[in-house]
Length: 339
Image (cartoon, rainbow, N blue to C red; front, side):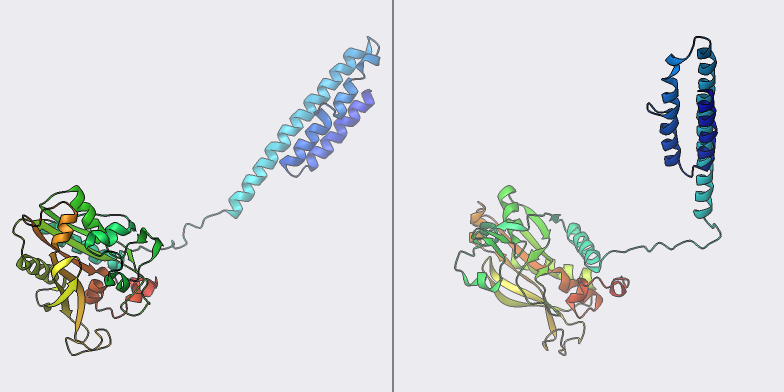
């Protein structure tokens, strides 16, 4: 048994010295010191020894166990040191190398102009309100004096989820919700995304961003509407901006008009962008229809108001002399870096 213990000591020393990783060390620990290990097997035979031999073999077995445990700790420390050295060599950072430049982003042109537009209207006493993009048919059409089977529904190319729920085609429903919750005086604008089944071209997109405004109070007239919008256009585009109002029809306003800005590309002579007309329509407007006020429990005999709606994309095109709306959505960094 003494020879067997010495053999275990000698064999363990060789194998521990040759171990290449922590996993190998763990396997050797189990092999020699585990419950079914070689040293344990020897100790189980101690009962066969004479009383004189037991203390001698017991002491030797303890020495062998201590030897193996010390070698395990020593080899483990050596492997950890070697692994650390290897990592230090492979992960060395050359502090003299030039650093990597972090690209800084910037606001999208639509966001730039929208923020300016908000500041302009806030300066005129307006509040900003928002509403759901998935809207009830009632708020998107009926409350705006557009009942079912009305021809105006066909011109909006609506995305229907079911008979009563639509993707909103305008942010006018936000105005209805505002008038239901808040009584005059009211001065609000409602920017947001809307959806229509339009073919994509230089001036149209199935997703776009209108900004609509509403004013309701006693004694509001069309002159207030014109003055507000002229101030807005000149603050946004400059005092030399040329605008015109054209009579139009909207079911939710009466009388109604469209506001055009002289084409920035051809200065009124006619080109592809303005379709040869020399003017670019940027918004529709008018006095709020009495039925719309009545639908929101506002007495049209006491109160009057005006409303307007404009497309953010067209405002930005006019601001930055951009002749194709699709550039806003293509995520071309070469285009976006200009802003």
